[in-house]
Amino acid sequence: MKTQYYTASTLNGFPADERGSLDWLLGLGEVDGMQDGYARFIAAVGAIAMGAHTYEWLLRHEGLLRAPTKWPYAAPTWVFSHRDLPLVPDADLRLVRGDVPAVHAAMMRAAGGKNIWLVGGGELVGSFYDHGLLDEIVVTIAPIVLPSGAPILPRRITDPPLAPTGVERHGDVFVTLTYGVAPGVAREPSLPVRSPGA
Ligand SMILES: NC(=O)c1ccc[n+]([C@@H]2O[C@H](COP(=O)([O-])OP(=O)(O)OC[C@H]3O[C@@H](n4cnc5c(N)ncnc54)[C@H](OP(=O)(O)O)[C@@H]3O)[C@@H](O)[C@H]2O)c1
Image (cartoon, rainbow, N blue to C red; front, top):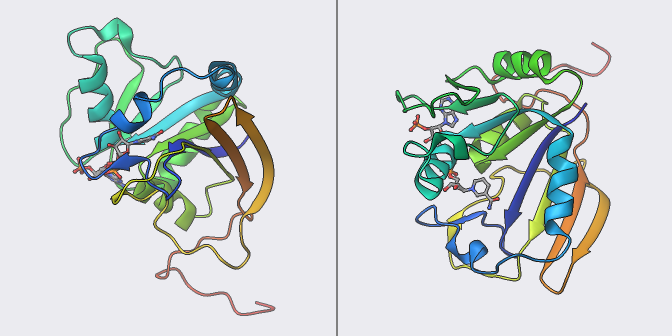
């Protein structure tokens, strides 16, 4: 049971452009093998978390408030926001704020032994990382470079570095890279620092 950040990104680390748009990604179209990879990934997912902007992008892109049956996920989904966002009728959704460890614990209980998918954005995934609650990053790199955008993971992860565990090529377009994150020590500066031997 892993907590995974599974996302697509430009080569220079932007999952979305500066307006939150994914047009640069959708413009690449369907690529052989990508759908199979996603189907394998999502079959192992038991709970999903995303930030407000990612959820709002989904609402707009799929027209979900007019066509709620197009909600794409069967797994229970937690949306982080400080606002009272509209919920897609009949989708297994809950709005939450703040307390990432408590939400993660609820997600673990709901996931029934399956994985947890952190959809993004980067700052929300970073707050799971800060609490030692991120196990794996799976990033599909698109052959695109943008001048700016929403950063994939605005954190410093150097010591230990991430551990590369997989490389998969999809057609002539995408490369999926998988990295393990060193196991779980809370990294919030405000938490007490444990001295060696304590
Ligand atoms: N390429 C891909 O595969 C991919 C994957 C995921 C996302 N995306 C895109 O990337 C963009 C990401 O946008 P983003 O970086 O702005 O991230 P985001 O995480 O989707 O949205 C950020 C917002 O989430 C809410 N939030 C985050 N943490 C919270 C917490 N602990 N408690 C309460 N609310 C919290 C806040 O919203 P409030 O203002 O409501 O409080 C915050 O402004 C989106 O446009 C999305 O479509 C792309």
